[in-house]
Image (cartoon, rainbow, N blue to C red; front, side, top):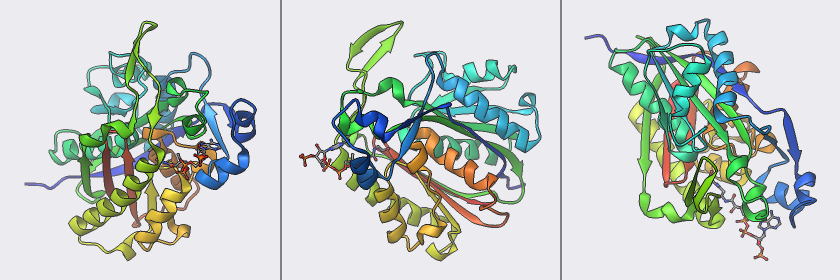
Length: 321
Ligand code: UT7
């Protein structure tokens, strides 16, 4: 039987036009550019316009990924969207995206794994691809966290931004995605959550993000090292084989600690957190697209993608480019 793999043949991303600096936030809450940069590495974030939805950001990122892949949306066999800020409770944002892409018929569903969402979606797509059932899969991470932030809480509102990133996978007999591992531990649900919901303007519970930043920080640093080592072992590779590390972009200090533990110099780490802040499920594909388009990621290199976030969820995907 033929062994199939997933190769990334296109990447794309999209950031809303409006850029909000730390100074602009410091005019609204008791914070400063200095504190935000020192504690997080964030200088600015992009914020969606009124009425701009996760599916709109996803559409722009998807079009760019399809263009690079050189295929039409009609050639897609599956669409997966990772988002925690969907357009509505249902239908899924993947279905809305499918319609905006002007196609129908292929399955489309959302993955909800918060900041690990893209890595979860990519690993899921890879399993479908390995089954040999599909030839082209679109995987998107798209978020509008600006809608679920308490803009009076300086402890959280300075940390997040909006954006989307996408990849197109093609079935191949050459790798491709070498290995992936996913994890969750629901007993930590309380340290990062949005304990409420909104539908048709009706709010129940508190539909705004709350977080124990310190606990999240410690957990993230621990599991980002563990899961990268796990995936390297599955692939039969060493830490020194990592050409590019793309961890979830939440805080530059988490990224630096992870890189240090994995003996990866910061020159081999893709970082966008300074300009994008934490865009949750969109952070990894946004960073990936940037490094593909500026020529840093080249054929034959090993790229380690890592996600960690609410749930708690975490995971890693190792790709041979
Ligand atoms: O995608 C996964 C989701 N999130 C994350 O990965 C975030 C993980 N956590 C973090 O990035 C960090 O824990 C934070 C950036 C959230 C906080 O950094 P920290 O070094 O852990 O600071 P802290 O929470 O220990 O707070 C230090 C001080 C506190 O004041 P006191 O109690 O020492 O007087 C906070 O009230 O900083 C204060 N503080 C702020 N000051 C100015 C908290 N937020 C701000 C702010 N501006 N925006």
